[in-house]
Length: 449
Image (cartoon, rainbow, N blue to C red; front, side, top):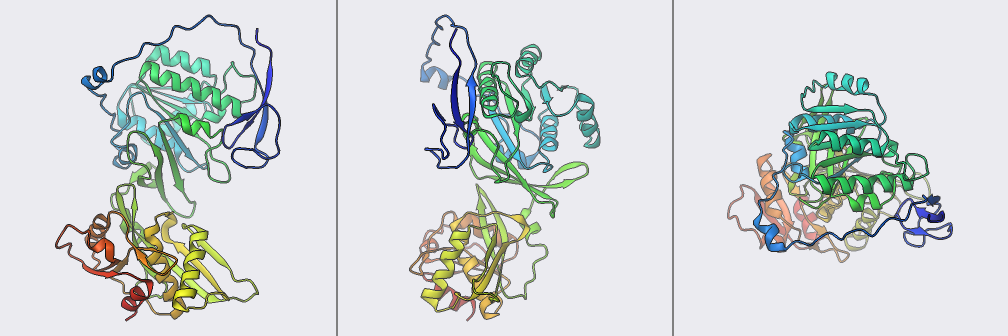
């Protein structure tokens, strides 16, 4: 028998250490090291190594077909459907609709499936399925929360798709700790990963998120899975955004847009119309930016408000964009264009709850701030694309042509784009007037005449 060993594991990065630290030496987070004891295990016999397979032999075999979910938005994010043998992590805040989406995915896949809810009984799951009008003869329900029992059910039923809702409430007898602890999540994740590869079953793991918005549990859980999806939403809005932050079998940062209703998740075919539906075209401080989420262009309205500071320290508030990048853009406005920002409050908001980390949004945000500061509206039929450098230059961005096609489809007539990107356009006529610019000063001159 092995002696029991105490180690300290970081709940943020998953690294373990022989002694406790106030600050994790790897990720530099404070107070994230938790103590747990490795279980006593019997000495096993030597394991026969698995034989290797020639790459050419694998390439000659037919690849496994994906399982379409009949939800086009979900299939887009997954890369065309669920791949057999893949492990998918679905995270989101409480009440955002993770369980609802999982049930609809199972119904759409039309495969032999097992829905395991360690938080609810079978009757409670059936009540939700009745409300969502989810009917399936191939779906089995289980309220099991013991990992070994779940694996036995998978072995007996041999399903093609399994949903674990949620990983924080499942525990394994191999680890002596409470459900939801770092060691339990790590052990259960490893067992599910082994089951996926051994039986070729696709598993969707539902995970809770922390108050910082990241999936709870060790970071290693995100490393071991094939796909990490976040379901984002706000109580003030009825739409939900399914975002891929990791996908070994498809594009990352792909998004799918849904509308949450009583009957479940309803797909939104044209999300740009939602984010621009209530746009005020005559107001100063607004601009439109064609964002590119994965392979999908989405037009987003940027709003800015600049006012004189009532207190000594001016406020800088931003929703949906990086705060530090906004500070950089304000410094460019003040240094390169002599627009005073030091004693002004600046508020920036991306309408509809969208979160954008695309540097191509720089020009639209900077123009919206200047528009509010000068109280001059940006032309309503103009879109703005471009990354802004510290010298005040407008740099090229990727896949401009796809962004412009989406803007043209929604009726926009003009587009300010970087001069370097204008040279890369292959289409002779996009149905939109191209205004190439090389500096921020030149861009603002064309916007405000």
